[in-house]
Length: 490
Ligand code: NAP
Ligand code: MG
Image (cartoon, rainbow, N blue to C red; front, side, top):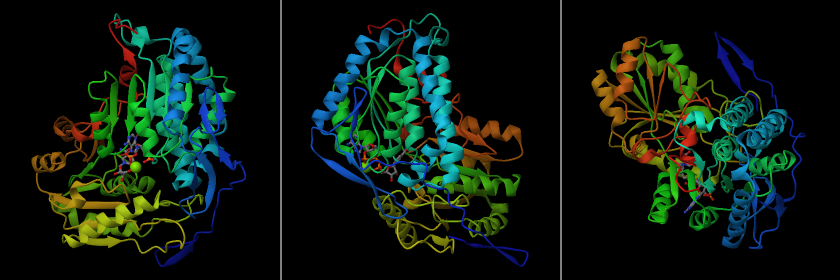
């Protein structure tokens, strides 16, 4: 889809720049990945996975029932007992490096498939998701033989079998966040990708086969929420979950008292705070990236913009102008900024919350872009006149919708930012270094970005406060949830 941009009276048309899908070889059907092989599900059930930008079916995928999940967990248990736990860290690292190199080599294939199955713009899957996923494997490969140095004198040992449940917003990246630290520390895994985005995890299973990882060290069971629930209830030793706070609470209740370890990475409603002394053009880019990156399907999205009153008018003018330049459409077009909403269900959720914003009296402003006829789409949207009590200020929308509030003093900014059940991330825009530190001390959020937003590095820990969950992924801290320390019984 081509779109016009107006600059100083001239109008430039963007020619379509579609990425070819020829590099992706889709199978008609994908079985479950258990004990190193693709197998038919004992459940006998399959489901269709689609392209959310076109609603066209891509493939049939197996739906794992409780019996299938049980077999996957048994296979992970055998691999743990027989081989993996006793393998020297340097040997485990070899496999992780192999997987990382394969991800780099096949990055384009993975990126195209990620965009086809999930709807995210190719420039994001190509430049962010895949490089970061490979970087996580490289990073944790480096720790595999250095755990004694990471936790000196604390006799680190693995936990056992990890059940890992991931969402649809960053399918490959979340798979890497889960698998890389688990494997590096000597655990084996059963991974459950999200129902709407199973395909890159299944391609990863092929890479894992080619890397000759011992069978059963990684198992991948596709399916919907029931498959995830079966995994939580199985005999795994640890559950690692990323997804909604609602499901996180269910999981916590389910495993209470079972002795299973748990980490939860849940939702967010991050405040992105712009002070009057900020470099405003730079801040605008950070605000846009904070909420429109990946269609706003980001747990740490800067979905509440807090603007200091003196710059509110000028910032709004700039933001509205920038909104009209966002190119919304074909995820596979290299010029696309905002792709498809991941599913019809998510689109309905966004529509429902946006309607509540209008109904509760906030003022809506939307990009005027033309949307494709088929597929799931939502216009980049701003809300002003938002008050703290509005649903759009409190609930996670998980879409390209920004709620804008104002503040006068730093104290008021802190109070408003922390007035949320969530606490995953925050952003601060100011030219004063001392103010950045003052704010970072007071913001109850796992990550505070200063004069940037949505920045990730495998060496940097990520995780929440309050209803955003507990446990950290990334960095040295990301090893801990997969280890017994102080020589506990393995
Ligand atoms: P979700 O249901 O929490 O999905 C996360 C993962 O958990 C998926 O693999 C899901 O399978 C699985 N699951 C669902 N019910 C389960 C259960 N009872 N036991 C174990 N696993 C279960 O999230 P969603 O329905 O996709 O999205 C709902 C909302 O959650 C979004 O609108 C957004 O606000 C939030 N969200 C947050 C994140 C994040 O990164 N923090 C990610 C995604 C969504 P299915 O795919 O089959 O549902
Ligand atoms: Mg769900």
